[in-house]
Each structure stands twice: as C-alpha cells, then as structure tokens.
Amino acid sequence: MSEIYQSIEEISPHLPPMQALMGLDLGTKTIGVAVSDSFRSVATPIETVKRKKFGVDAQRLIEIIKGRNIGGIILGLPMNMDGSEGPRAQSTRAFARNLSALVDAPIGFWDERLSTVAAERALLEADTSRKRRAEVIDHVAASYILQGVLDRLSHLGSAS
Image (cartoon, rainbow, N blue to C red; front, side):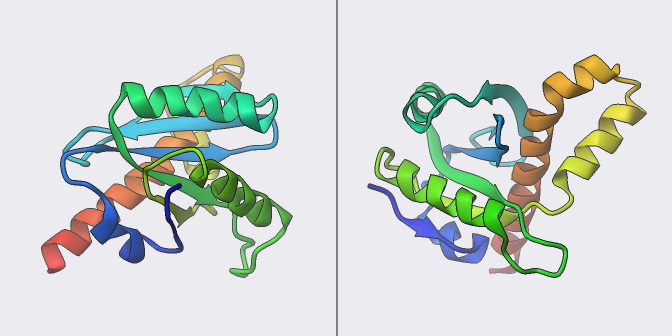
C-alpha cells in the first residue's frame, strides 16, 4: 500500500531518485497517461486507457508502472474555478485511495484546472484533425499535468 500526498511539496521527499513519474488525467470514460524520463525533465503522453471498471483500469496502469519503472504517480485533481472541490475531485481522490492499495509508488495530486484547455489549444495549433484530437486529448492533458509537476519539482530542487 502506498502513501497519498496532498501536494507536490509533500510528495517530493518520498520520490525515489532516477525513477520516472506517471501523470494521470482521469475522465469518466478514459484515463490519459503520461510518463516522464528518469531525470524528470520531460513529460511524454503515452496512451489513453478506455475505462471499464476499476480492477481492469488499475491492471493496465500497473502494467505501465512495472514496464516503465515508475517511482511516483500524479493524478490531476479537477478543482472548480473557485478552488473548491466538486464530485469529480472526490471521485479522483477515491480512485487514488483504491489505487494506493495496489501499488508501492507514492501518489500525489496536481491542480489540473486548465490542463485540458492547454492541451486542446496545443493540438489546434498543431493543426490536428478533430478525430485525432478526440483520440489524444486525454493523454496530452496528462502530459500537461505531469509537466507542471516536473517543473515544480525542478523549482523545489533548485530552491533547496
């Protein structure tokens, strides 16, 4: 069972060195997945998992965790624009609790309020077709979430 941390500042000391991080963008129908390099400098979108039920979804995530030597998991936390938490944030926290029982990597959260908007904008700028955008938006959003975390970790590291 792994620990769940509420902030990047909290999780930072518990992340093993030279291991990649995984970023997740949880939707109701899909889970966008991104991973970092082992130096934690770049987030790369890798896949969108079509949601079935928790056990099946978790099994796919565990395969990725093992296959890519993941040392920590970050879930995008869908906050309301006023900073409060709604049903989607509560659902994300429940997913984290369930996942923590199955994995050894520490789990943390990142405010994902504008990640999908940023991902959509980047895909539009890249002249991606509507069909292709629909296929990749979730894992591109996951990479925005994870890149925000990597940048924050880098800033924390240089500040200490």
